[in-house]
Length: 443
Image (cartoon, rainbow, N blue to C red; front, side, top):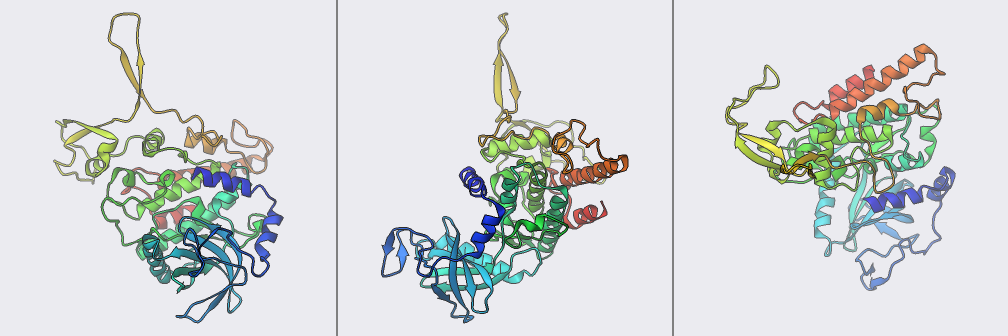
């Protein structure tokens, strides 16, 4: 992830106009889209079992009869290649071409799962499936062509965050998509800025008065149903919900946690949890921001003992946090002590035994050179306003009229508390998409 982000930062150092022009151009016919050593010339694959693609090549779907002319390379990964193509009816699409099915059976199964899910979905903020077919042993998925993703927008803004109007628009659209998925029901399982794309190739959607249009992509790890199977690990680590880390039951609320992390990152410009952190660092960050997970989660989590020590049996009866909540007598039989904390040993001049003080590991700096977030509240308070080029300790530009200051503060803090409701550790108390959408629209 770190290396990808560094490459993205370097790539998007170019101007907006140059990027827009490059996406509209096509390679000369016959040019290799992805230059690589030839592996099997007879099968038309390179040494990594990818289909050898040239500009102007035609890939035809036998089932639908549609043909797709390859125009330009978009990207590549461990699964295969993605190229920009033009269908028979002139529609521009993103064509994902997987490696030969004999060498990536597991990836092909995920792709088939993604196709089955996308075929069921019809929502304005979810990517549309155009076609799906097999070509010379390579599975091909054609989807609508979209523009840059949210992280690329952040890079373009020097990782200082996006305008609050843009962040609120993206939040509302993603909440609408999650509400739709929850009603199907489907768990996306991998919400992150890289999987939310801007419709269109120009950056003009963020300028002027036009509201940007975002779409959710990548349903390869999605699950059909309200709950995931036990001991299934989903989500990219910095956006992974606490119930996934602890091995507790995972439902649609896990996607809301990921969305809360995305919203905070879009507004502040930095991720809540460093991308270089391991599972221990992510859990410690959660405790740093939001306190200890509820005892119920620790009790039922299949991976709780990776992070906590189970100590003496609890003697006093458990007390519910809410009056109407009932807890079985044997549900909280154990106390849990966080094990993976850094022990700092301090010795005094006396002969007394050394005292060990346990503290959260320092998150002062990010290996990528960005200062880490130490307080979500302070980050929202000190986030610069779009009308003022410098950061103010008070948080509000003094040049604004008093009524404008109050309005900006009201909108900012209503959004802050909405994000906090998305980031409740207990998935049962985490806000649902429909309720969050109403709160966002009312503010």
